[in-house]
Length: 166
Image 1 (tube, rainbow, N blue to C red):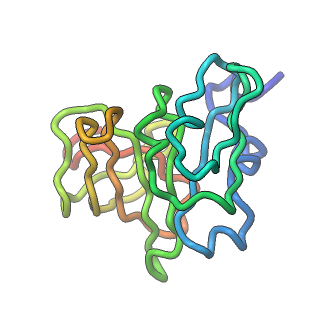
Image 2: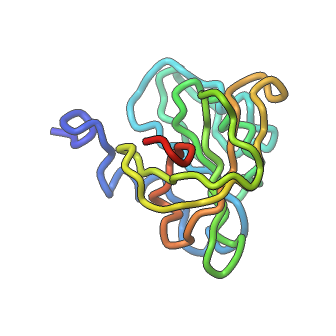
Image 3: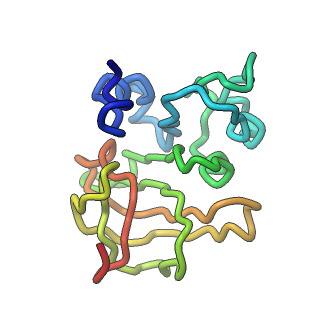
């Protein structure tokens, strides 16, 4: 049986399937769509101006990404109602990466704010700082918070809490 169904968490193989090859990760920001089950949803495809998320043959298809077309703009992050899309930039610096995280809580953190960075299970894995905040009002969707994180945790950081919480 599938680990996602048993534990609610994707397996290492699931994560590997949605992570671009190492060469692409050295070329700038990229999307990772952590949508692992067929559900009737496709706003990610329609939000992508660059055609990086393939058109669905069936509304229940799992999104497929053409990373060569992805610019890492993050429009799909705000459009995803399942909060399953992230943008990662492993080229930000030699020891930090940027991760764009959907954020549906109030208040929104401010640029420069220290935050707790969490993994998929909500466990705090590191401290980080807010680099950019895009309000959902401007993107007609979910707010997106870009955080600086330890580069070694680029494929681990998937959430945040404000310091003093979580």
